[in-house]
Image (cartoon, rainbow, N blue to C red; front, side, top):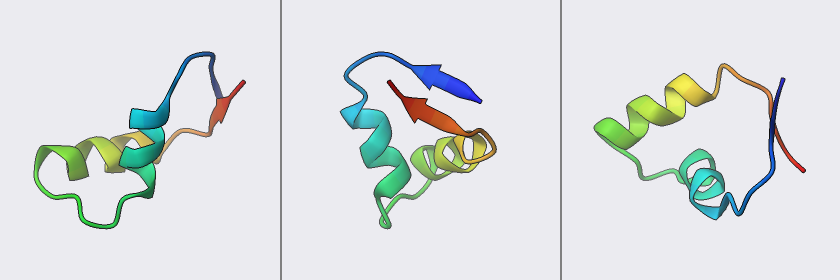
Length: 39
């Protein structure tokens, strides 16, 4: 589990967007392996 304490709107957008391709899609796939919690 990863705890994030910041303004992570960009990270939330990356994980929520359905229209990602290329580099952004690869980042979203890589990050989806972790349980990220915004505190």
